[in-house]
Length: 400
Image (cartoon, rainbow, N blue to C red; front, top):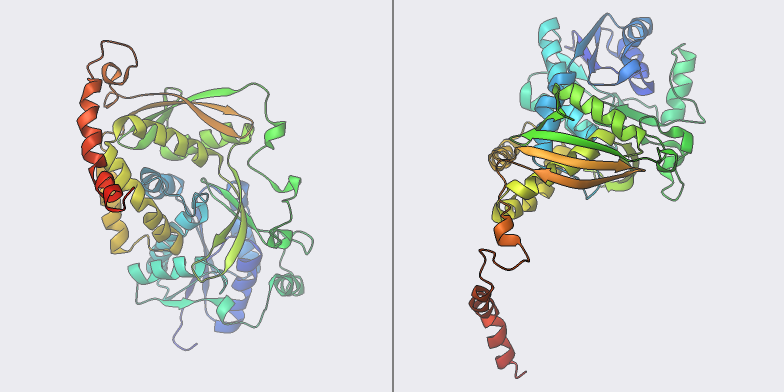
């Protein structure tokens, strides 16, 4: 493509982006900057720079964005209790806008005029990356190799990598597509493409099998301030450190495994297996504090908007005006969501066993079943009559 002088590639060191790096060099014959955002991939980041240079990168940029990822992306999503299609805590979805945003920054800093990603033409990530590029830097040219080259699938990518001497972390026997960050680890591909096949037991990384988890439950207390978690067992932690701590606790007790078939934005169904130990604990804890502090109608209104909010994250509209508007509503509802949730972790389960808040709307004197409470039970008679009036009229009309 004429006019491309430098490309910034969102590079992970995995199969796809390793092949893409070499392919970009051969196809566009211009400098390529390999960019990696450290958002909690762990040891995967350690060898990225050397591998990128060995594969042909002219520059390598690695940015530590772990705190920003949790503080500015995961926590706002937690304040909205976002869950896609009832199960998916959006671990991959929420990472893409941060990576793309940082990639645009690197493009500006290095004088690049194009950005590239490794998302396939069948998936959601291509949309998430490109919507972010367009929202933040519409002047940059977007290169999507999976929609341009003639490599049809991962077996061909593995062959291309071997031909060019590129080491890759997958084999034809285990061609899993893995995506890891501080919120989760996802698996797709290989035998997982059969929705009837059980995931291999040795595939999981972050969590023990529930049946192998400790026989003694672990109790944990999580403090929230205005909807954000700030402390675990009384110890205040930074956002990234807090999520990492809960990942350890949840993983030890087999918390957060999810196996689902989800609906991609492009219209296909996809089977994914996820490990989200810390995120699963935080969802339960957050809901527990909200149960004390949110007004009924505010809670119900907010909950009615969760599917829409989750869709926006899943589809890639993090930097869209409608997400900002919804976020404002979500955050307004969180002003009094301050308090502590106490949970029991045991063999894959998270059970709320206590909650308290200085802003609690729970009134023992009204809720008590004992005599002498401030609630007058006789008041319910007129309340029921008025609410049943339309049902009475309908029954009379129908001759019941």
